[in-house]
Length: 181
Image (tube, rainbow, N blue to C red):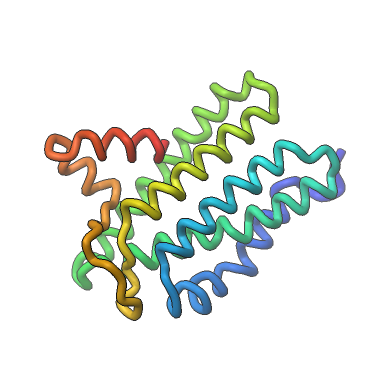
């Protein structure tokens, strides 16, 4: 049916742009700003993917989504390394990999549940959730890049911190839990 598998442009553009997000942009600039921008753009491109009707449109939207998706993954891993003590980096990266794996599985489950909706609504829902997550990143996470000096009044929060401190921060726990899944 398709000459080009619909996911192939996404993977290829992720491969090409990951070094740019990680080295050129993320290491020399504001990681959290980049992270919130690429998350916002991913949401926009997912909405666009729901609206396109041609194979060329699908390839373009998948390519653009892949470009910013690599920025999200590389930026999140870089931020994790920035806030981790050297002796805890292995543990934190392992936690990150486990959380991403479980979240991916839950995402597929939720995708199957909302898959009964018209296709355009599935992409619009995912896009809107990503836009809300980008807002949460911008509002609740402080800059982690040691080369960038920024307001330190915000507290950097990762999901395992939320799970550990659930009783103290129930409101934050519920908001991030809802946005993350």
